[in-house]
Length: 223
Image (cartoon, rainbow, N blue to C red; front, side):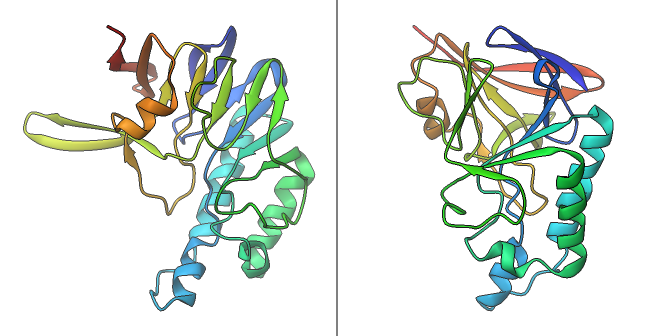
């Protein structure tokens, strides 16, 4: 984990795309998209049906790494409203075990707004420690906010080689987390949709852990 200052608080960004908030002893993740493979399979596109197991396994590792006693999932935790019902027994058991060791809050997203989460509390958004947790950044918001939805990735060309890495995108008071799910794509962190969602801002940066340090890459500057 690498330290990160944001909105007057100290955080820890993990190599696995999760954010730990020591003040609240909370782990924050966005866009798990559980049961995405089974959704595509039901529409004729067959994919290996193990994405939920892999995502939940990584989530278990993040909980062990941080010791967090609370988990906030920032929306699109399931790929569709019927996702919880499609969890196969092994993945369902993994999820039940995780929710027994931590207080669990599911923030709803556009994919899972009508999903009945099998364990924990379901909310549209939540204010914690002066920070609003929601699925999609609210354009024009000026108060501290954490969100997901966009699956940001930093895309660069280094020595003629194109690379893409999941990243968080941060302004002075608002931050969009990378997708945590194992079967998720990504939007270029410089995309106008992301930069516009974080306005008003003076500066917007991509941040990600690399080599045990926080890497900060400028995306946009006012003026």
